[in-house]
Length: 211
Ligand code: B16
Ligand code: MG
Image (cartoon, rainbow, N blue to C red; front, side, top):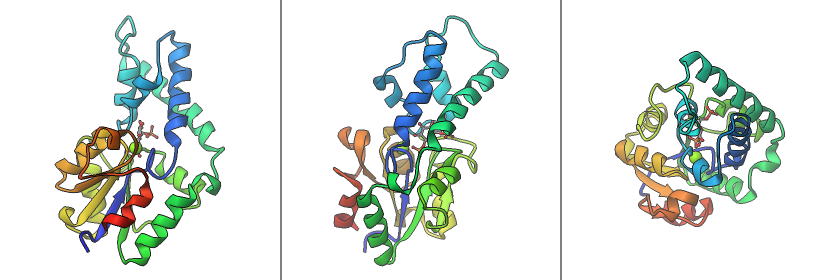
């Protein structure tokens, strides 16, 4: 076997919370009179909440105080969390669920490596609370992807060397984080289209062919 552990990004890999992020940021941008489209939204993938806000505010005519920025980030997060309450285990795609179970049956350790501070809530909504061997998320890190911190912490929590872990990502910034951490990366979605990984897959089930 090539790897002993697999570290999954959450948004855009295991579930489609990226659509909820889009809707919440779009609502904030509209209220500020700023342009925001899906192309801009793609730049927010894997990026922390405050760094995302800076991208959303790029065309804002005047500099904002830190307290004002925190209030805007909080406003976005509140509408994002309202959207997350709609999620249920039915939002975990069947192919993702069966792939996770098959990987576990092969003896691999499975972890989450997500920039999101909402990770514990999302895992509960999806019925995945307690499923993973380790959860490393936005609440444990001080530097966001493309910094490798979140993945290095996940490997450490699994008790594995980075080189024995495979990262699964949908964001180019996330693939870069995996590489900077010394890990191979399997990409899906946007990052796969950009050929950012050692493996660029059509879907998460493609993992079963490479481990
Ligand atoms: P939150 P991932 C990332 O999650 C998202 O891709 C990114 O769009 C978001 O800004 C970031 O989490 C922070 O999320 O506001 O919930 O803390 O892709 O690393 O699982
Ligand atoms: Mg992602």
